Length: 404
Image (cartoon, rainbow, N blue to C red):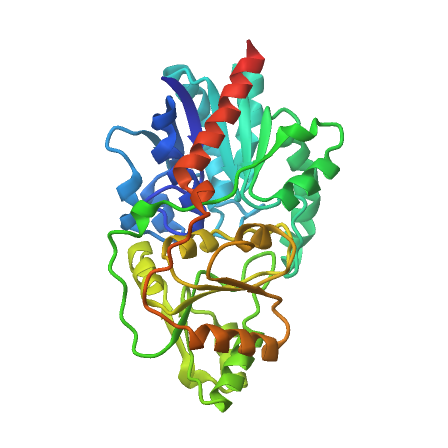
């Protein structure tokens, strides 16, 4: 069995969306004759940096999985990341241990995933120092990210020039670059015209039925829309205002809709809810474990997705929504990563996040044909995590064949 180092800043028991993709790749790689060796951060460091801990995610971590976990360097005054410096503080221990791991495990390849991006710098170093080829996985754009909510202060002035400088140095020597949407692949092909367009490969996010089938749905009395995740990121705000205004329109029509938000408390969203006048129809749970989040989603009448307005976006929650077998309302553009996934999928409604009246009409149609029966979709096998891991190993095998 061929070995591959899987480098990820966040890995269980770290919680949050950043861990899911790498964890599922690691889970299914042995089925395709590849043995993963994980290089990541230890739990004490996650806790020190107040990062989410979710022990329920450890169910996908095999007992015999080889894992190297390191601590963090002291917090630097310069180049702190947004999460109390965790990714930048990992750089020194990561560079210190990578040679030891390569020499001991003798892997055929190195795979490194980001965001966060700074730890990806170890990949070209490892290639130059130890002769190991590497594959880069970009879950979000790096230097091509559109900053709707730019970082302020000295960090804001430094980050974009730094990203413009660092990204080409990581991607230049990469054997292949994997992205999550076709729009993202097109943008990167245009940004790097000197590279073969086939070097940029689309492997979307996906879902694993094991995550959902054994979890019982929560019970809600009212017709409930659930939104799981975050509204505010470093790149853009997923604006709930049109949906909240649509709720108010529906209330005037005699239709009561509950908006249930499963995710970290967001004062900006709370203010919008209050200003819109629907506080009595809004429920904010705070952060829940992945298990409890799935339970909430499975018990909801409809699952709500709100796009950021960026065509490259392909939020991972859409795949969890598919796995939960509930109707989906996606408020996003008609083009881009979200549309690429939801178009043609049963019981999924895609509308621009603009006109509250249009949104209200769509919700009323969903409301009138409401059912608690699971939605059985026939055309989503291509998004199975196991299938997508098979696509990843085809990339790995092609890199090895090119070496020979």
